[in-house]
Length: 536
Image 1 (cartoon, rainbow, N blue to C red):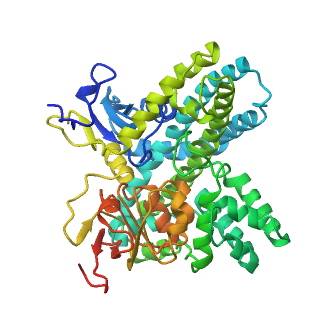
Image 2: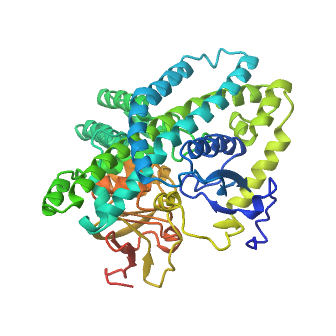
């Protein structure tokens, strides 16, 4: 029987059979409403790309993606099971193979394609040429999605096995995963680049003063007014050239840091006030293995650790290159198309291009049909449903479900499971990074609010993407609405050595901004405290 839909969120099913599936709102990747064009690319990358990997690895389902009233939903449709069923040993071998394929084949392919895109003269291209490039971008996005999941799917199995196998040895799966810090991974590289930029600012009091308050534009204007400020601006530009292709959230309709460096400058303010973040600990793994002595599990666990570290490296690297670097090039093309269509008078602004579907955009480039009325209707829908709380699930729950496929268990560790009910003074979630801390809750909806987070406060967010990483340098602990032990928030919190509880379901709506809380990353609970620090 289908789940009832709220009166303020009516659903029209796109294809026959959609209503028979269970649809989950994808809060982990798209916590905010998305535009029509952004969702079309989400389907290319995270729908068709995932399905290519599912077919290669013999997984018994296929991904479907839909956008209901600007909110993203995903479902898993049953597919033929591989004749051999789930083979853990085969997935471990695949994880090793994908690590080799990533370094030797896929990453060079991605870098070559990116170099090709960066050599395009978009501003000098004719409109028909830009239309040709749009068709190339569709093929490019689909291929990036295919590599994304071919590279990551086996690694997620390996990371899940590691979390379970080492959990008992370390006291918890979250504590075990702290052993997977990747010193040369993209997260660590970004963290060091931010610390270098902060050190440059810290050495000049006038630079710190220029960064202290106001908007990004105001800070940059102040920095341009004196020699040390111009040196810092050059350092910032170098940082943005390397790292600025990411935005506040996943999605081609979101501005990058190169377009709006405000989140970077806001995070720098917090880093300048915060003590140095602790480094991740890798040595403890050898000490734990030594305790096993001649236990027959010792070699198996050691092998699992080695493989999990390889998988963690690939996981970080593919996100940097595919989710952000590749997406940025597509965004630049779409912005140029939007600019041309705005100049032609068929769109009000260039950004309105994201409110067209791929098919509509292609036809508009051909015919220069006026799309302003259509865009206005879509903008009105965005405004209407931004104030509506969309259902967590839609469609039909599976009847008589048997044992879950291992991949579903893995996905639960990334996206999180069903949250437990909160009480008046206790908010349960998933233990994601060990440790216990009391501090002030700071509820942020976006990295654009980074300037509100003060050092030593508890970062409370709907979810975090790689673009939130700078905020972890100032935060003393992290709490999120969604996510599991393998989510981005969990991984980065462990790298920074701060407690984290994820997947609470409602932290951003229950925790009051500025109220004291206790984050227990070992037990996976957040306690609400009175003003004096006692339990509320």
